[in-house]
Image 1: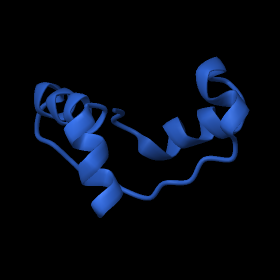
Image 2: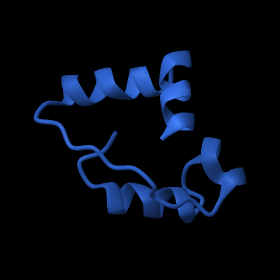
Image 3: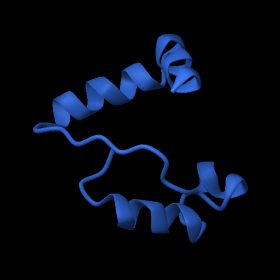
Image 4: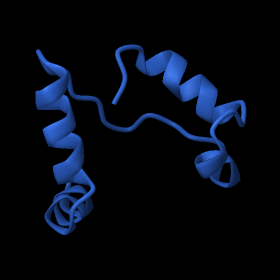
Length: 59
């Protein structure tokens, strides 16, 4: 979740995020925009759930 996805992607690919550093390079494959951070966070939590993983694997 980020208000600037391009900058967020750069921080991951430059190794500035420890938890994702080992999996570089990252590339954007899906983007959704939401009106509020609450809506974005709700969607992010869903995508990280078991149901969300199934949805990602089918799309």
